[in-house]
Length: 160
Ligand code: RP5
Figure (cartoon, rainbow, N blue to C red):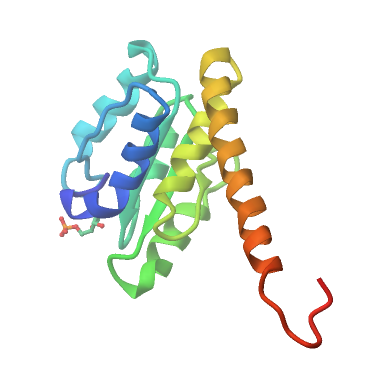
């Protein structure tokens, strides 16, 4: 993340990765304030065995794009609503030039970034895929229960 002020949102990604038992690092790296550290991190990530990078930043959010410019790894960008309701960060992150993609989730979508990362990692990790499938089955179960509860609500003109 670009700053520890991003932590309240980015924590949602950490919580999900932790619940899926995925080892992860949390770092504050700023493309504008600590560009050398960002470059070192991006250069060394793949050789160190990192598989996917989630980069969250607000304002003129250069962090995900700069990392993607250096590493061959997939980078998932999380635009954060620090200013302008996050539209500044969204446009900064999503509008990458050809050949340097950042998979951008919605504004403050840290949870979805982690889910996407888990889907990627599940391609080569059967145990993780099983945990992930268990989680999605629970989600489906919630909707089934919701529909059972909604079916109990009666209206004269409600047909189900
Ligand atoms: C961005 O600037 C960070 O990602 C953060 O969202 C925003 C504000 O940072 P702080 O001034 O709170 O450190 O680079």
